Amino acid sequence: MKKLYIVRHTQKDDSKIGDDYDKPLTQEGLDNAHAIGAFLKNQKSTCDLIVSSPAKRTRQTSEIIAEELNYRKSIMYNEVLYMAYVNEMIETITYTFDTVNTMVLVAHNPSVTALALTLVGLKEEIKMGGVVEIEFNCDSWIDIAKENAKLIDYTIPK
Image (spheres, rainbow, N blue to C red):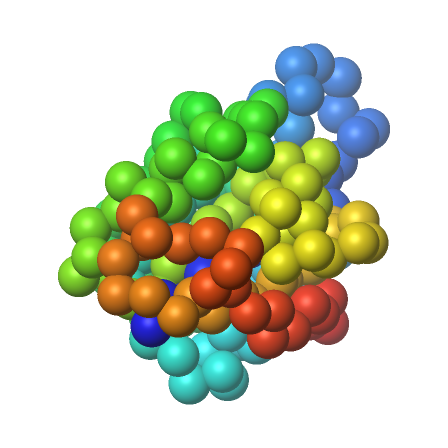
């Protein structure tokens, strides 16, 4: 059994002028990232790996989640996850070592919504700070597919 949490970064600060890649989180976004971490911790699920886009807002979101989960390993930052196509996101997941049973993937829309639609048919947009929990009935990440995927939950922790 493999478990995937798909997380959309929290609120970015659109008032900052400059490149979208470098936009930080707002104070609300920082607070919501802590809420996501606390929510995941309350799920009593161990996190074996956090994978994140390296954009500033996703980096901040994933680092706060890691802090809340007492995650002491390295966060894997993958440049592909910024403006990724669904097949690139799935490739990132399937290349994961099988010793990882639970993964948190922090990225952007529309990619995260497209991924949830592809894997479990979620037909609504994942809002900023949204968390989608999916279980796969398989022992290897290479075997994940919509046929063995089950949507457990979609929530926006507050």
